[in-house]
Image (cartoon, rainbow, N blue to C red; front, top):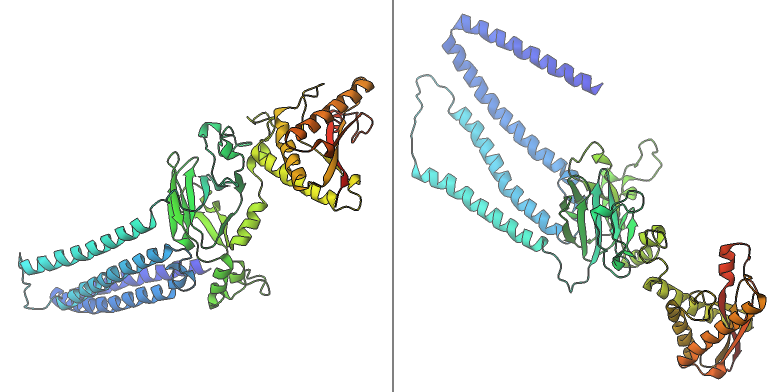
Length: 501
């Protein structure tokens, strides 16, 4: 409806202009060309002054009206450390260009009025004025030099990369039509290498090279989480066309170019909650987020920082949005602890895993912590002998009592625990599945228990604190009807048998 009204008004204005032109032509014929031309000139010169005043007032008033929502003032002041410098550069440039903008428009329309056509007055022409040329060449040159130098200073302060010795949080953003893939390093703090030839939409969307051990703990995220007041380095790249990594609230904008990684370093200074509190002070944010639900949450309550693409990268460009959460360091660490690496979730022990069948450092560390916790839980029981602790990473060659190399990590941890609890004696028991001869299984289980016991003795544990026994297939922990069940039955267990307090 409003659109039809605007079209109607434009059509009416056009008709009026045409009719005025016809009236002017008739008046010219009646009163004479010279008289009419003089009157037209007088009217135009005065209307130009009116237009100048209205135009400049509108420009200034609209800038003031929209300064909070479009110019980064009020609630939308920069939420990053470097953003203050960017805003300062913008304000300095706006000051000088604003003065020139207003002055040139006043001069333009004033000259149109002052030098309007007058009967008997002839224009004066001069071809050269050295002073004027110095002024209109020198003044803009000086102003431009000041603006450029100021811009270079800000650029050099904002754009340098990090020093290798600096503590920094790093993540990677990869743009594609039409979304962002966000990747964080795991506990090692390092992002693994990528190769575009390895990209597989189903199993490897970023082309991570799984033979690079740094990729093992990297995880993918649907939202960007960052701690406040910590320096962040974001690696930026693209998989298909040119994109742009744009965080307007942090004054961060950098192209994502296929094949040419870029970066940006910034420090968030306001958490999401702090920014919301700032917004809550302004009337335009104290309105329902959903107009159809007047009793629902207000706009400021549902505000979130956003990552957008500032490049026209295709029809789905509008959908390239990711939520950015700026939180306290404690909240950030809690969030990190909940993440699981992409490798562990999708690649570990599959045919695509170059480390299939091997124990990796993160698995050893996790099992060590688990084993220590199990032992501590057992030792505080009323009857510790009732708790059997399975040594899940103790392996033997098939049909043999010879330990595999991967077993040393868990057995070394057992030795470490026994040294910490020097008053504890334990029983090492061996178990098998029901495959083969029962007597042979009993002998094999006993030999395996003795092998583990001897390993611990060689690690400095007194032999009198250790007892070994083999149970063969007599004490199954699972069914023997499936391969998985039989594997669970082939095991070494540890049990506390005495404690001298």
